[in-house]
Every structure is written in structure tokens, then in C-alpha cells.
Amino acid sequence: MIFEEEGYTVIKNAIDEKFADFLGRCILLKRQVAKTYFDKKWIPESYTEWGVFGDGQVKDVYCCYGDQAMDTLLLDLQSKVEERLNYKLIPNYTFTRVYEKNSELVKHTDRFSCEISTTLNLKSDKIWPIFLKDKEKRTVQINLGPGDMLVYRGNRLEHWRNPYHGQLCVQSFLHYTNKETKGSEKNLYDGRPHLGLTSHFCKHYINAPDYKE
Image 1 (spheres, one colour):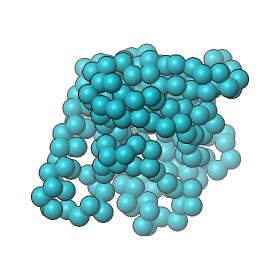
Image 2 (cartoon, rainbow, N blue to C red; image 1 turned 60 degrees about the horizontal axis):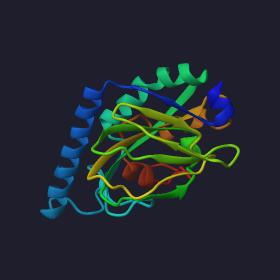
Image 3 (cartoon, rainbow, N blue to C red; image 1 turned 90 degrees about the vertical axis):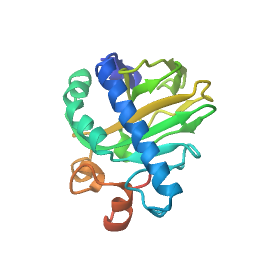
């Protein structure tokens, strides 16, 4: 199986391109609402329920943890990922980011909750490769169109993106763990009581030492 051999696989048309565009526009509208709320001082900057601008990996751009539509998609696409990998999966969380011109994703690996990571292109005006270091430490370039999804071992394979030369790219990351991996059952929903809850909830109400954005 390709995933076992290489540590990654691509699912073309994981969702319909029109549906991807709809979800991408929903996230862009959510970004606009969040900006208005923050600009008008309607909510404090520490309030993360509508997302934040900038995180530990990419500065300034809009991102949101546990968006309800994306967490629903996490469940809807689970069987498709399981069929491709021949694994039983535990759904953990989603994280969505709106990249802008010159955005860059530095080389990194992710935490335990991202053992089986996916990155799903929802909307973009330019093809923007994601790069991986495979098991043999070779650099692999993956191009994704809207609706396409890369599945990869996020906590093992180093991955990154060079500066973006388009205007906007909306990517959603759907994260799972292999049910057979030790600790995965306890990590259901990334330690949350159910999906759709925010990172603010995780940080303040859950004893989750593994938790970080």
C-alpha cells in the first residue's frame, strides 16, 4: 500500500469542487466577521470563538480551530480516508487557515493528534505546492486543486510551503489518529467532550498536556 510505503497519499476530488468553493467562501465570510468584531472592539482579542489572526506557524493570517462545518467534514470524510489507508481512525480536530500573498509555512512536524493528517484545498487562485520529506528523506512536491486532499503522517514527515505568489488560499486540515495507536482512544476529539468546541475551551477547561495549536 502506497501510504504504508511512502507515508502519504493524495485523494483527488475528496469533495466536489463546487462544495469546496462554498466551504471556502464560508470561511472567508467568517474571517470578515472576525475582523469586524475585533476592529469594532465588539469582542476582545483573547476571544477565539471566531478565529484568530496569526498562529505559531504563520503570522498575521486568519485561522480557526474546530470550525463547526470543518469538524462535520472531519466525520464525513473519515470513511473515505479509512478506505484509502485501510485503517480505523479516531477523529481529533480541524484547523483552517486563509493564506495570503507571501504567506509561508515553515518546515515542521505536528503533534500526536495529527498522526494521520490531511490538508484539503477549499479555494485558491494559484496552485501552491506543499513539500514533504518522505521516509527516505527525499523531498516530494504535491500540487492540490480545489477539492483535492493530501493525507500524510503529520507527526513524522516534515512538511512546508514556500512563499505563496497568489492572493488567497483556503486550506483545511483534518486530523485523525490510527485507532491501533496507543493513546488514540483517549485522544478522541482532541480531548474535547465533542466536536465544534474551540481552542480556547481546550486551553482553559481541559487537562490536555499534548494540546497546542
